[in-house]
Amino acid sequence: MSTQWDRVWDGRDIGVTPARRMIFKIFDTIPLSSGAKVLDVGCGSGTLATYWEKRGCDITGLDFSDRALELTSKKSIKVIKGVATWLPFHKDTFDLVYSDGLLEHFIDPKPILREIFRVSKGYVISILPRNTLYNFIHNIVFRVPKEYKRSDIEWLWLHQELNWQVKYKVLIFGLLVVVCQPPMAKASGLAPALIPSGEGETIGKLTFALSLIFREAVRSALETNPQTLQENRD
Image (cartoon, rainbow, N blue to C red; front, side, top):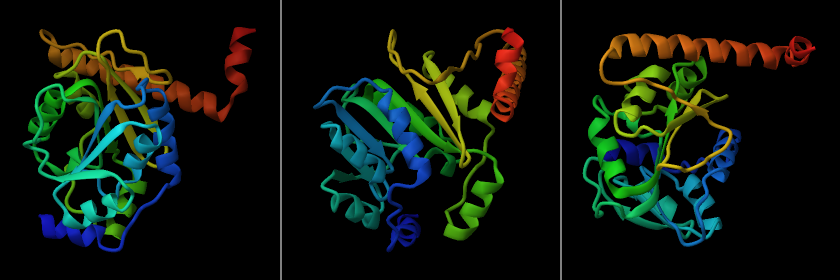
């Protein structure tokens, strides 16, 4: 697998794309001070890691692709070789742990999520591809290793099982950003994922699915006709 990812990153430095600029705006809402410890799990070319370096954070990039680590280290980012299923850090080491394009490559991502939550004492962010035509074409063009697609609801539910403070944002370019916050934390511009658990789980998932569909329908309608909201208020 490492050799496969080395081929993906050979001569490929993604750089700051429009999608990543949108991700940076979400990062802007995370209230971390200079010197905060941040971990990028599956850092790839290190583009996202450079954001935290510029904010003065103590950022570490982890990957098991030698080529990815080489690209990231050239950006003056501290790197370490490792696997996401066993992170070589003590519990509660980082103020933020995030991943981009990682979880969808595992049949069962729960062990990776548990490790990520274990080493974070603060925020956890997962950036995930949605089931869109954009991502389908992207994977063909760049020959991305196999992905195990899940719906937005399934991804949110997986995170909800490990942390109650779950929020999310759907981005264009086919991305879902899930932000898990510590108690009393505030990150603006994100919708709360009010997902019930425990008894009535099936009904809870259905209710959440309907609420998500309704919310997205309203958002799309308002984006199409921004005057609608004002007209309704009048």
